[in-house]
Amino acid sequence: MTFWLTAERTAEKPSLQADQQKRRGPAAARRLKKLAIDLSPRPFLQAVVFAGLGDKERTLEALDRMTVVGPVRMGSILSQPELALLRGDPRLKALRKKVGLPE
Image 1 (cartoon, rainbow, N blue to C red):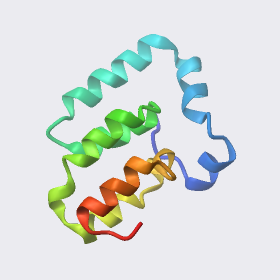
Image 2 (cartoon, helix red, strand yellow):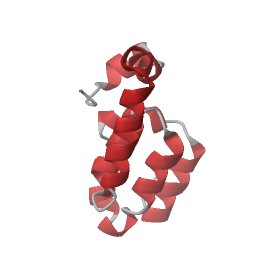
Image 3 (tube, helix red, strand yellow):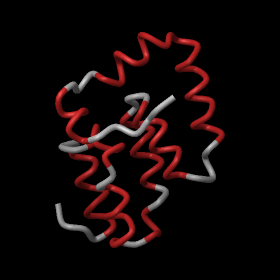
């Protein structure tokens, strides 16, 4: 199971996560959601799993718990290609502002 997507590939095919979920079926999606919930003490990994599932809301919730790491580390985290599905989302701009990063 691979969650590591390059920004270019995600940009080429925005529905990549949905296509992968259809191929793997609902049982696999349920297993991944359970895994993400089990990862709650590790919010970055949880955010990556939820991003791979295409769940923006839960991805942002996990990232919101990470705002205590500071602007430099958070800037590095938000630039990860696995979180490309959030780019352009106004809630991401609010999160960046909350940590002290430029929009």
